[in-house]
Length: 378
View 1 (cartoon, rainbow, N blue to C red):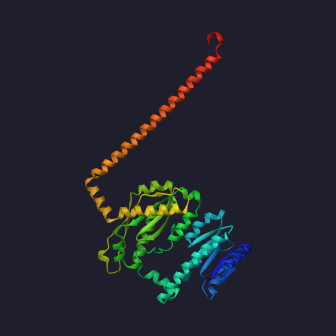
View 2: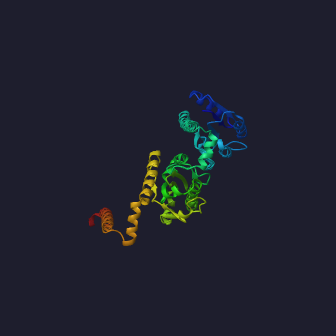
View 3: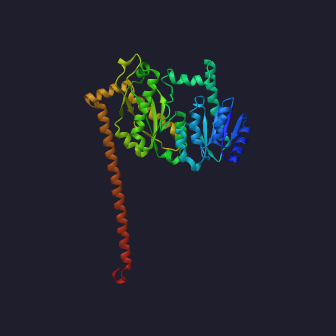
C-alpha cells in the first residue's frame, strides 16, 4: 500500500516513519506542506492508496487538502486519515464533511496507527479485487458507481452535504467525538416507506437524488440541533442528536413527506407524487462505549423497521379506524394503575420518614428544655 503522509512538523514525520517502517510499510512518501502533497499526487506514476493528513498546517490546511483530494475522481474513495491533537477536535466536524474517512489523535499511538492502516489496506485490496475481476480500472469504476444500478442494500454515497456522513465515517465520528458528548446524545432512525418499489421503478440516478432529498429533509428540520446523519442502505437513515433535541424529533410527528420529481424514464406514470419518510422513537446512548453506540444504532433501526413493516402498517390502519384493541387498552390501564400505586407508596414512605424525623426532633427538644430548667422544676 502506497501512503502519503503530510505534516509540517518534522518530528511527527520522523515518528511516523519509525512506526510505519516497523510495520513493514515501505512505500511511504513524506512531505511538509499541502501544496507539495498536491504536486506529488499529480506527478506520481503509481497512485497513492492512503493519505495521512495533519489538520493544522500553515497555508493550505489539511481540511482543504482533503477536499482537494476528494475532488480527484481516482481518489474519491481513497482512505484519508486526519492527524490532530486533542485540543483541535472542533475541526473534526469540518474534516468529515470534507470527506475524511477517520482520524488519529496526537500524541500518536503506534498500535492504533497500524490497526487503522490495516483496515484501510484491506478496504483498498477489496476494491482492487472488484476492479480486476470486472476488468476495469479505478476511474471507470467511479463512473459506473455513479451511473449504474445500486443494490437496495448498498450504503450509497449520496455525495457532499453538510452534516451528512458516509456510514463507516459516521460511527467513527460519533464514537470519537468525546465521552461526554456521546453520553449526552441519542440515536434515531428514519426509513422511506415502500422503498423496494421506488428502487425498482426509479432510474438509478433519480433514486440517488431522491435519497439526497430525503436526507436534506431530515437535516433541514434538525440542523439547528446539531444533527449528523448517515445513509445505511435499504432506504434507512441513522442519525445522532443531543438528547435535548428529542422534543424536536417528537414534534415532527413520526412522518415526513418527500416530494418525488417527475421521472424522465419509462415509469413516469407509476411514480407517486410523494413518498413518506417514517421516523422511529430515538434510542439514548446510556454508556460512552462503542458497544453501547452499536446497540443504540441497532435498536433505532429495529424500531423504524417495525413501524414500516407491512403488518405494522395494517395494524396502524385498523387502530386509526376503530381505536385501540381492547387488550392494548386494558394493558395501558393496568400500567397506569401500577404507576399510580407506586406513586402512592412512595408518597407514604416520604410521609412516614418526615413524621419520624419530626418526632425525633420533638423528643430532642423536650430533653434539651428539661436539662436547661433549674433543679426545682425537674
